[in-house]
Image (cartoon, rainbow, N blue to C red):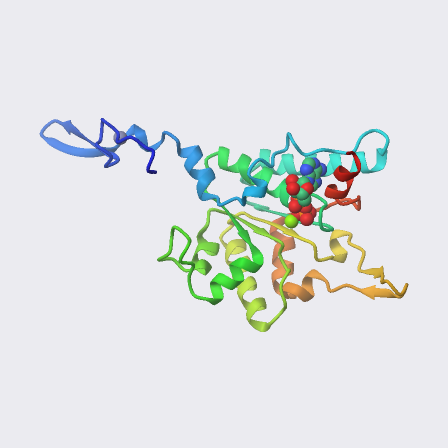
Length: 256
Ligand SMILES: Nc1ncnc2c1ncn2[C@@H]1O[C@H](COP(=O)(O)OP(=O)(O)O)[C@@H](O)[C@H]1O
Ligand SMILES: [Mg+2]
Ligand SMILES: [Zn+2]
């Protein structure tokens, strides 16, 4: 970082020389561990809109709305439990399924930030953006420009894939997402994902009334990302269905 002053102990090399008997060797300097949490948070590339998203500022509806209050509290507790037990090798992932504006990304980022605090290297990736970057070869704006975006998605210690399935489906998309999910599943690498795409096994409603009052069929998660990736996701993730409550942005707007 440009604002850092150079460490007096190691002169910025990150190593100090230690003399033992006749041999001199190098050990990592203490300055490497200072600010590690801040660095990890920066590297997580959380979008500015969610920089402050936390469990503390996640609002549950008031007592005037007891069902929504209970359901959202249950969801909040389940995500907190996932974080408390992190990392859980038998079920390393978390999948949040629900309508737009239900708070999925907020909760996923809140979880990710807690996991960063635990010292894990996390990475936020927008699904569509990740696929675009993989397709175009590499991401020149990323600080790991020599690494392909694909490799980054496989290697990230903890990956948050936001808005999974929000992309037109092609064989290429299906194969790509399948290899990422399968690789992470096989290597027990945590994956946190959010999706607006409904899934019957996550309790989603698959048909909804269209403007013409005809039931409108919605494409499912299996159709959007492929059945193989979907099945792997369910195998590796704690699946959480967001309650059907009004979009938080609308709820909030009404209060003013
Ligand atoms: N229960 C909540 N408490 C506080 N802020 C919320 C809550 N739910 C959503 N938000 C905020 O509303 C906006 C939309 O929520 P978001 O998490 O992006 O929804 P989703 O990912 O489900 O579409 C974000 O700015 C988020 O921080
Ligand atoms: Mg979202
Ligand atoms: Zn140093």
